[in-house]
Amino acid sequence: DAGVIQSPRHEVTEMGQEVTLRCKPISGHNSLFWYRQTMMRGLELLIYFNNNVPIDDSGMPEDRFSAKMPNASFSTLKIQPSEPRDSAVYFCASTLHGYEQYFGPGTRLTVT
Amino acid sequence: DAKTTQPTSMDCAEGRAANLPCNHSTISGNEYVYWYRQIHSQGPQYIIHGLKNNETNEMASLIITEDRKSSTLILPHATLRDTAVYYCIVRVSGGYQKVTFGTGTKLQVIP
Image (tube, rainbow over all chains, first blue to last red; front, side, top):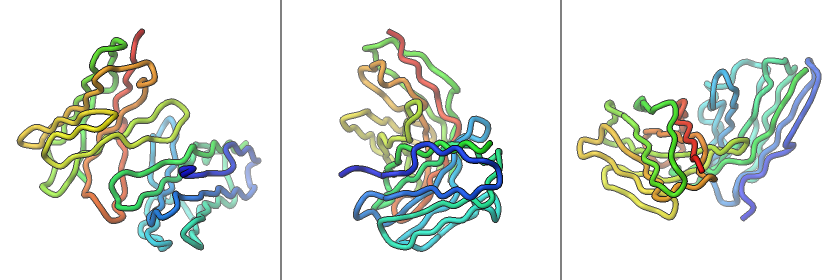
């Protein structure tokens, strides 16, 4: 298996622009998680889905952030409009039985 | 999820065993102990988990005290590639339970 796939790996954008991060979970996994990591705040859970349904989005920082999972093999995290403080590494992870989570390589977002 | 306490950093000589401690004195009976690590610029990687018995896999061993209030992750023969931040997490297992990461222990393996 190719593991969790994230795209793009790096994104540089200007403040105010829309940013869309993409994730393909491991085939057969039924839960998907979006995390954000910064030096100041560490690794934070933003939202997670089970069977394509959002279960807990309490970690989403504000309404500028939204996430969707239209099917079992694809999820997006959108930021609109983006701000410099959104600069971070965004990770996607998936799991089947809820034991170990498998993380993708991350997307490094820089908002100037 | 129960709170965990880990040392901020540790050093270990290459080839020696690395013993990483974790305190979780408020752990509940149905909470498991999980360990993940994050090598620089990579996503976190699952290592091992356990409930009350000691566990071993190809990567590491997990020793949980009888009262379950603390545990130790053991890397039997540390290599330079084991340099990473190690996270100890306690949570209810299964289903779609989220994982809350703390600050972890920065392990530096020294040649």
